[in-house]
Length: 96
Length: 501
Image 1 (cartoon, chains in turn brown, yellow):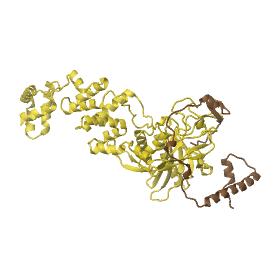
Image 2 (cartoon, one colour; image 1 turned 135 degrees about the vertical axis):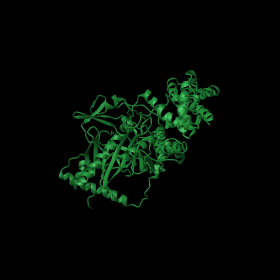
Image 3 (tube, chains in turn purple, red; image 1 turned 90 degrees about the horizontal axis):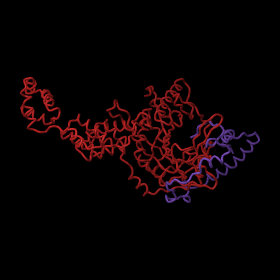
Image 4 (tube, chains in turn yellow, cyan; image 1 turned 180 degrees about the horizontal axis):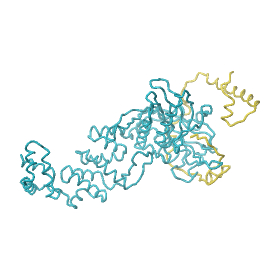
């Protein structure tokens, strides 16, 4: 089966640095996984939303503000913090 | 205005992210608001801590539906949420909850008005189609400091409606007009506040160019995170010029994601297609698909306010307002409703009321507030009518006194200033200041006769009798002078015509 992915690109997206052996191993495993999904995609199923997972508006929450953790508790569970904020290595790419 | 060479056409599509007007976050009960200390508006659901489950906020869903109804969109029977996966510290869960395949709003259109040739001329109107709008969560805020970055999750989980247009916009002016119109519709319906200074409205801007007449769209670039109308305008102008320059030099456009530096007025490359993210979207297993009842849609449809351009057409066509006054009034729903309340109290002169509201009242309100336009630098600041010392019926009373000839238009300005200062009725101020014009026919008749007999005006009388209508005005000045300006001008005119007939 032809590979439907570029292992180098995937490794880059996942921030992984792989050896040649690892690339070969993971490529073959990914191909197996994709093969399973292909089998699912080939199955004759109606293209609608799953009826078993539908709720009506009674399942919504009301717009009532509740309790918050507080900055002290939020920063305590982070590896590093400063001035009430979580401290991380410098990131530049803007995702939002 | 941009100067696009006539053989090129620019094609623009916008993705507008709007924070919805709610008290709690979209999938969590944590409150949110601008200007709080970092990480003080965060709860375990926002952080995606183990054992927590997101539950959708009803108000956020209803505000989204209301937006859809405002733009005449379809509200599908079902909508669903997906996970958009990515590694970045602005997102505590490593995925953002969004709607990929089943958004809450599908289709719709926004009417826009382009600038006219001058302030008092209405510009061209166009309809910009909406592709869809989906309800997602906002992400946290990063600030970069030295070798590290600091994360504040107060904004994470704030309800965000992403409104995606079709590529229907054709100039920076159209993009600007679209955003003004959209902001007016969102605020007038109470869907969102759209305060750009507080980051409540942010835009991604897709731009491509093609030779005029070409059917195929050019390669587009996407400039992300624009937080003011002027940034969107400047980005379109910049990207259009850059792409045309590249293509005319025989180079090609790279499909890429760009950023905008407003201080330098310059765009820059964030990442090209090779580095495009693979978000591995999949249906969120924690949030079931939501069925939206037709009863809810019908109930919300009743909350849709009159469209601002429908209102503008009604003011011009039915009430006979000049375009200048109508266009000012319709931009602010509260102001338009205030105006309509005054018209209801004195229905015979809507233009007289509109002129006082659009000029004098707005000027005095702005002066007393001293606020600057927050969401749009070029537009006048939204005024607060809550603290307006004059009530609609009182303004109607002032216009009625003028229309009845009790005071002159000049005096009305003076009375208005006093009303704004004291909140008193116009009639009370007119009486207190002795401004009431003299309508005593007997006394006025005597003065008119005396003036007519004055040889100094004989020439004007002769001219009037010879058919020069305007010559009669030369007689009014001396009469006004002798009555210290208190004579009713309508009555003077009547008496003059009677005696000179």
